[in-house]
Length: 227
Image 1 (cartoon, rainbow, N blue to C red):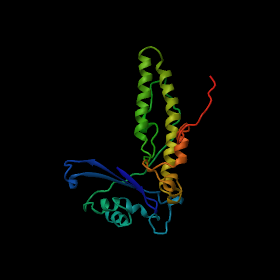
Image 2: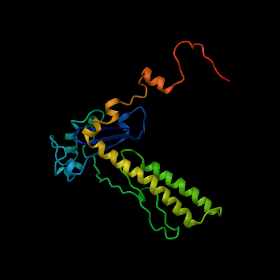
Image 3: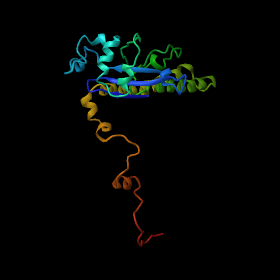
Image 4: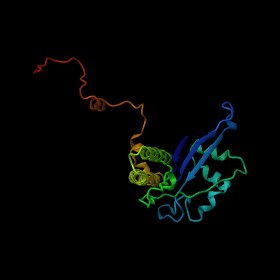
């Protein structure tokens, strides 16, 4: 899986979905995604190269237009799109989200989890994580109900309160991240673009001393320790 951003405001994504024969890449199935601001979004209405002009909806399902645009993509996205067989069907969808808020649980009989409670934009990849967290929290609370330690109404309300705060924060963060990934100027000023993110990058001596404040280079001199 890998993703990238394009100066014209596209977010690009590619992932392997199936590998029938590891030795024959031509048999593999890939998922390609490309997202951009809606044409009626003032922040993404007109670009100098025309990528996001009004009327761009035609790009959503037209393979020829998609391939023409891909000529400006970097690798492996460019080749992945250009190599798509003629007749490949493209599917479209509009990203949607909402911040969860408390609801009437009908005395503990209604609980919402996952996308039913907090659909979020997917660029940060946190939707599934929070769906799993929902199930984990609610399961533990319902186990307490079965053990006679909580009422069902109280357990579902406790789950709802926890989820609304936890997932609500992630919905907002994910939307901020999605917005930035479609704004080349903002993204180019981000820490990852300015300083890089290579985990193998050698630390400076100053950074090493900060990480290990008690480490001293060379021999240790005389010192007096009071008992």
